[in-house]
Amino acid sequence: MLLEPRTAAPGALWRWQRQAAELLWRGAGFWLGLSLLMCLAMFIAHRWPLLEGVLAVTSLLACMLIAAETDRSGRSAPGEMLAVLRAHARVLLGFAALITVAGALVWVLLLARPGVAWWNVLYTARNSVEVLSPDGFIALRQVFVYSAFALGLTYFGLNIPGLTSFFQFPCMTLLGLPFRDAWRLSAAGQMRNLLPMLGIALMFVVLPVLFGLLLPPFVPVLYCFFGALSYVAFREIFLGIPENRPRVVAAATAGPSPLSSRA
Figure 1 (spheres, rainbow, N blue to C red):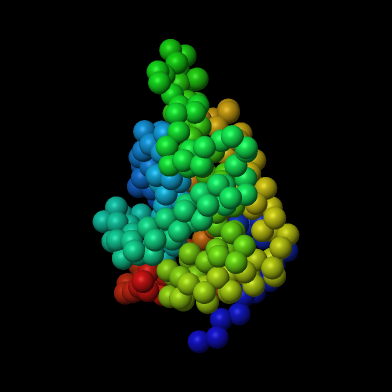
Figure 2 (cartoon, rainbow, N blue to C red):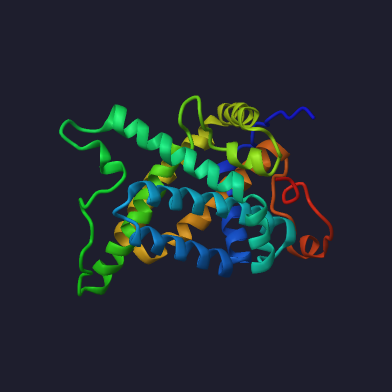
């Protein structure tokens, strides 16, 4: 099967944001709970940057799969969502680990400041939280700032030159492509939709900072939103589906779907 990425229609970024919000509203309970647990785990693991990175990337990629299943089925039943995650667990965890390790190597070899120990990518006590502030808002910021910061960095991990590309993971899991073919197809799709992709990049940089500073307890919502945004962009560019599937029709559809049946 020959796959050719499409150029999205004008106004794609605004349309994708609306569709992502709709999918999030359809099934907020399960994946918000999952993202909240992952963000709390990132706070617990904030002394171990590699582990925190794996948790952040895994959370975002899992939200992409949950968005696809929500669009297909019209709901987010926990059992069905867990089945989807289990079906793609090997690719999900492997891809998250690859991004995290590659990012750590880039930091050690290219970005680390002189005098900073290389093992800081494994363990660091710098900026670690020993005691939560008695001020409730500041305490929430202390808890969620790590997951917000990790989410901003995740975008760059999804775009490591020659290794990863933004839509590579959904191309592997939802289209069943091998690693290199998924990278090539994803890169071609990004180049054909450069302006909306630059808009997504800006959102990945700006929104985690704003949420971390002003709305820290809503950082888990941001993981879900970005996961859904990535999925609906993928869906239009690579599947030619410009809108969310109607909820009633989707819920009545039985049988496997190309979006959930391929590992």
